[in-house]
Length: 281
Image 1 (cartoon, helix red, strand yellow):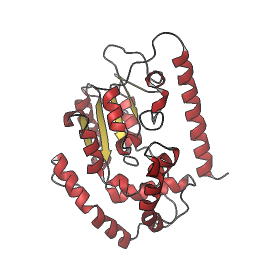
Image 2: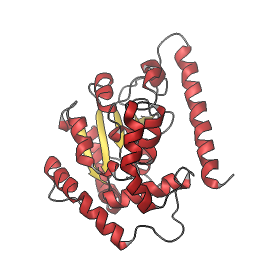
Image 3: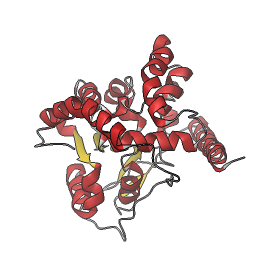
């Protein structure tokens, strides 16, 4: 078995064990953990793993049992008691959280989150959508899921998503396509934020450019802490965490980059207007 499929198998086993343990805790009588105080909601391939590590290191923060619980996207039918079983009990002066990058993109999530976490806060990371799309493609390919070249995968994306969504966004086929083949769609950030703002006030959602986190992690992290009402803190290091290494020549050619940049330009302009940013990428 090659590295990609092997990693996918290990991930599935790890998440199955974590989910089974949550079922066991949920089945016991008495209280389970408290609902989280905040979520990192995305986007995928935008630095969420790094930010998860930085926040988990804060002395007043206790993370969930693992990253990407996917309750509001993949596992909503398991119910809130199963979800709460992933978190510690409430404690004075302590906050808990989880990070699932699919939350920003999946259309059903904002309403579910608003109903379940009416006072929580949310953090979103947004990366140059061209770079994000190609990183997403490499990630999907590394798991052995994507048989097409990058240009061909982009051309196939609209048809793949339309076919998978024919029966709604919560079928196994829809989740498979939305998670794996949404290379360009996930970069249309304003559309996704509009769905979130339809269910919660803007002041509860803090949006950060991934490039700012990469360039000045200390200042960006400090801004996130202020938004979350957490005391200032500096982790031992601001390492970048990623699970994929690029190999081989890039398929993001100058011509394809220019084509994608032009396609994303109106969406980036809309994003800048929505957030009051002077520019995006």
